[in-house]
Length: 474
Ligand SMILES: [Zn+2]
Figure 1 (cartoon, helix red, strand yellow):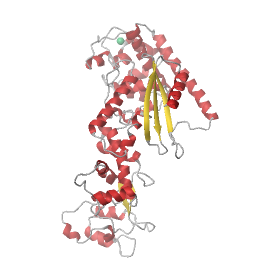
Figure 2 (cartoon, protein in one colour):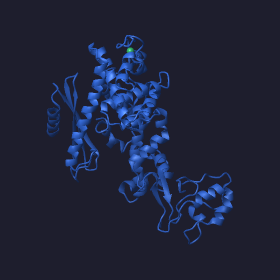
Figure 3 (cartoon, protein in one colour):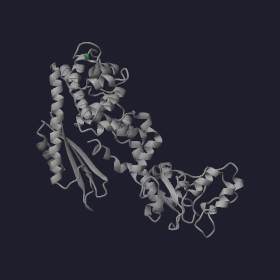
Figure 4 (tube, protein in one colour):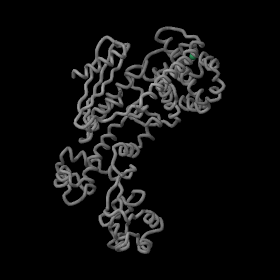
């Protein structure tokens, strides 16, 4: 829901305007509350991780949501790219005449009293510059010291003693006259060996006639928001700062129900709402484990130290691996990945669902004062995995008869048409059905969105149908 609808609402505005950081922060805060409000079974209302942490890639321990600031920049970069590569466009002509009549976009300054649009596009300059590289035609338009033209896409560093280089300013000055070849002797005479090698490794293709800027981050050399976003996130070091190392893909690729993956992810990020954790966030509640009444309840206790949990692991035949897999005192993420590493695929899946079932026993006790036996816990885990697998098989065999893709990908509507996507969500405890609708045009651009809800809760098929009806009436 967050990825398909909420994140795409501000897309259109973001492709033209640089949104103020405070506004982006507010939107991210709203998305964050939405996420935590709908994903937890308790501890509701607490935001366990910031949006920065959630927007880290999934293999770095995040949820892969968008970092809106980086996304905004990548969208604006697209406009900047158009200014560079489409000189005959009306918009390009207008902006060029007003803001950079005597130079190119990269040399342009923001100017006096710039319009909001120009200021926005201009702000993406360094991102676009970092992702560009020149392919060498005649070499007469490429400045050796300022523009990115070497094979690896970097410029040469400006030397201290410029006089030594005389009138060598353009790439063409390093090429033989009337020949598309590097002037080896000349280059060797003025540069050190490392620079010489870098230049000689930069290819000169006879087929490239004119100097041309290409986007070096995509195979087809054309700017893409996806690659620019990735670059922007990497440059800012988000993954390193907000990610957590671990074999997260083992979890995401496991054949287990999504709710189990989500729980394992929470444990790995150390945000399982145990009593000790809740206390640390200012929630007043007793600290002891409700299942064994012995010891404080933190993630390590609930899963691996509680005598009742150990009995479950023993019954399931996994304790031998788990006991030896516990490597660090109280570092739940390290222990989790160390255990997963020791298990084969089938054991990993059983481990994950049993974690879920053990946590469920704890919740049943806390919220409903129900006591599940160890056998119930193990049986529930096994039942979940077998019923989920058989549901997957039915779904897969249904897919074989339909020639559609396994993964549903959003496609643009036909030319001149709009597409409306609708989804319903069901909240048992609020006794409500919520609907989200998002309208996009034939370029995939956001047009409008709407949310509604009804009471009381109804069956899934009926809820989805009512959602469609609301969209038709909209
Ligand atoms: Zn216990």
